Length: 422
Image 1 (tube, rainbow, N blue to C red):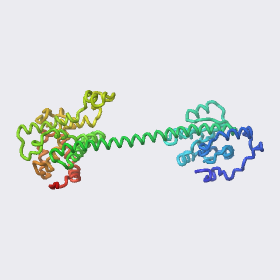
Image 2: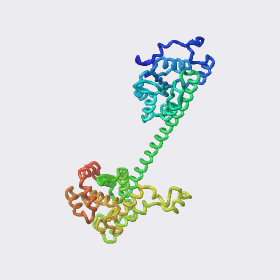
Image 3: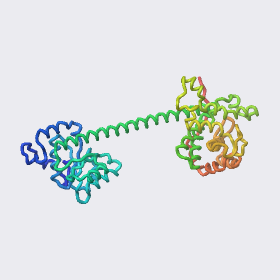
Image 4: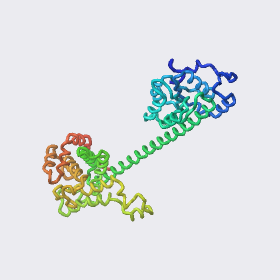
């Protein structure tokens, strides 16, 4: 609400008579024309655009202050004689500064200062106290409550303009810092989002590279990641970590890149030697993803970065991906590979991915098999409870089986068709 829109409790500037600087009774509070002109000269254009709020229960005091400031070139005012409406006016109109009387009925200036200090979005609005009180205790209390400056009544207009100018300069600089900080935060947010998108795309591309090796060119890695996320969430894992697990799980079979095509694409049953070679994809996956040694970093970049700390182990997602790639074929009873780990010795991320990967393998077409019916997939998983799979993880899977099935249908692979190149 600007001065031109004030209710009857406020001061419309149109009703204020112009000041005649030659009439001393109108300048009873001023030292003279020269001082006022000098004070007016320091008010530069940006300051003149500021909105100044006047709060005093005596209308004549608001009128007097507004007249002085109008003569200094200020034109935007927000005035009230009702202290009870101050907070709403500040919230609605965001004045650049408040000129506040201390001694008022119903709600005094100290209480208004306290309320402003407690309001998160308006606590930084500077307040200049206008007071006839000269006792040190009042000054100290107002400072403790956040007052920025004091002016004694009767107000000296030249001092008023100078004090206001200094307050507005400080406010403009503070606003600049806040805006600059917000701009930097937004730039960092956008840059972080870009890096996150690039990382997500790179992980998915790398994961699909592994899947292309054994002709699984559909959404297998995406589905497994989604299943892992759902199971992790059901297990009560922190949402941020569950999101990392989803991305990391997409790299579970990246080690297939190191397996021979003769083994990887064989449609029939594998020999013992071929099966042993297939099992090595866990080892290959670990070697592909695991942190780069300092010597490798030095070869590539000429030096080891200070944050390196012995490899890229500082990247949580790559640590998880390496663990998943290496342990997702371990079994709860210790009969899995490559280490033969059992029970809780298998990292939780490996146990979760084991359930997700087996379900997707059972329920989709592979070069060596057709997709199994839904009920049969669930039955095979239940048979593996306590032997192949962690019982708690399997329970989480079945607690979310409806969501799992929805994801499976949403991300189902398109029917395969043979193509020819001419």
